Image 1 (cartoon, rainbow, N blue to C red):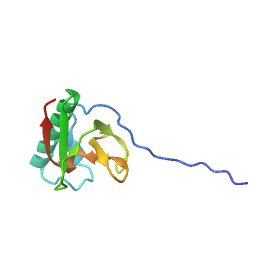
Image 2 (image 1 turned 120 degrees about the vertical axis):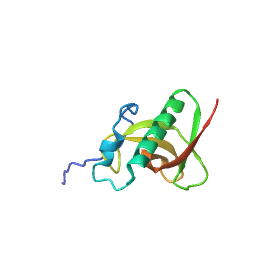
Image 3 (image 1 turned 90 degrees about the horizontal axis):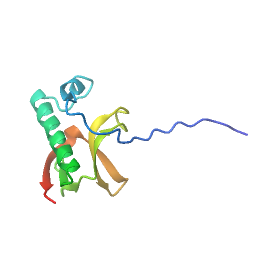
Length: 116
């Protein structure tokens, strides 16, 4: 008989993105993108705006890089799953492969808000 222990990592939303989250400090790590501090600040503001609209009950859509069409945001927060395994700002969108997909804050090319 064989016995063994198996460790399974499963990411989850750890809560809202703090308004004072230090995007510049995150960027100082071993992360290659975005490599321009102005872009880091702009993308940080962008995900905080997305979170604010989402929490107000508005429908938000994102464009990931140049991926068309826009995808509806189904959740926003500090996701602690792959590839970082620590809480990092993300949005969640529907995915045909995995049922949903967490998109890192710096991967969002643009967004639009639909008033509800």
